[in-house]
Structure formats: structure tokens, C-alpha cells
Length: 305
Image (cartoon, rainbow, N blue to C red):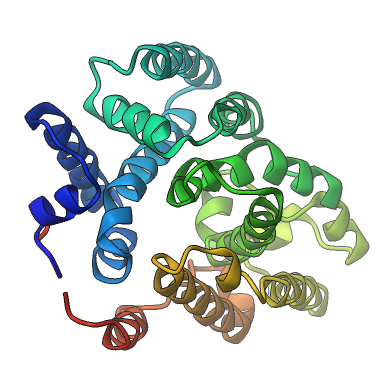
């Protein structure tokens, strides 16, 4: 793995302040999401890594603001952040090193700014005001408003000029699968936090109440609901077939690893059954390490910031 300095140079990032901004952004990702950070550093082509690290740091920053505090506090903070982002994209400068690095990445990679504005709008509406889904249509609207642009403000940077319509549609399918798997894996924790991420009309279809889920009741109806949700997630994951071909070759090992980890986690949820209501379903440490090392072994050998 090339050093971080070498990685910055490979991406054409020069100037002490700018390199420090990208380093700050990468360190933020490492602290918050070490697994994705390591996947990028180990598997992505070095010239892509700084752009993607800046994008992931920005995505995480918006997520954190959208999920912190009371609804009014979230709305106020997101309004302020939106103004800061708009100013950074316009001027290329900001008091925040994450926004400076991200603005530079957006300009350098020519990512269409509508993805950024869509993500910020979705953060202020679909995420900050989230109160569950009434139906599958509500879930799809959430993906369109927040989750899809949230992924593209990050992954979209690996395409010079941004994703074309076919590539963007591929990431939309990817997000559909990833969100379903994530909601199922985090079902217990979300319920404990007062978030129900299964559409309410599907609970009604199976004659299941929210209390049934919150109390982890082991009934045929609850098991049927969970089996239905995992089948939907499996179908969405199957629909991502072909996603690798839509990614730049330099990011394909990362995408393949992400998809394998999703499949691994969904299998764990399927095996957990009713237990998924009582504790979140992780994939442990061994499986991700095995997948990561196997993916790394297929790349030629080339630290951290």
C-alpha cells in the first residue's frame, strides 16, 4: 500500500494546505468508519482514494448533523451547513477543512452539483424528519431523496464528470439493496431508538404490531414478516448484478467487497431469524477480514494519514 503522501501525489493534489485538508478528511473517515476507510486504502486505485475519502467525510458530516439533536436543532444545523456548503462550492474556500477538501474534489472531478443539493435537501427532509415508512412507496421516496444522492456525493467522485445515467441508475439499485440490508441488520437498535424502518403497511399485511417487534415476540406472524423482508432484500441484492461493470476499474475491488459484505450480512440476518429483533446482526470481525484480505490478494502490491 503506498504511503498517504504518495497517494495524494498520485491524485495530483498539491499545496500544503490542500494536502492537509485531504489528510484531515481522511482521518475523520478513519475515526468514524475504519472498515470503509481500510477498504479504500487497500483496494482502490491510489489516484481515486483522496477524492473518495473527501466524499465519504462529507457524506458522514451531513449524516451526523441530520441525526443529532432535536428536530428543531437538526433543522437549524442543516440550514447552516447548507449555507456553508454552498459558499464552499462557490468560492472553493471554507473555515472547515472537510468542506475545503470536498469543494476541491467536486470541482476537480466535475461532479454535477445537483447531487450535492439533492443530498442536503434530503437530509433536511427525509432524514431529519424521519418517522418511518407508511408503504413501499415511502421507502422508495426516501431512497430517491436521501440515500441515493448520499451515495453519489461520495462514489460519484470516482467518475470524471460524474456518473452517466446508466451508472447513476446502477448505484440506485445498489442503494436499494444496501438500505434494506442495513435496516434489517440494525433492526433491534433502531427499534430501541424509536425508529421503525419496515413499512407499516407490511406489518398490517402480516397482522404484526409495532409492540410485537419492540418486544421481540416469537410468533408465526412475526417470523413470516421477517422472512418476507429478507426475501425482498435478497431480491434487491440480486438486482445489483452487473454493478461492477458500471464502476471504474480502479474502484471495482472495493465495490465487489462491499457487495460480498452485504451478502454476508444478509445471510447472517436470515440465520438470526427472530433474534434480529433482540440484537443487531453484525458480520463479526473474521468474515470482513477474510473478504478484505482475499480481495487484496488479487491486487498487485503497491500509511495511513
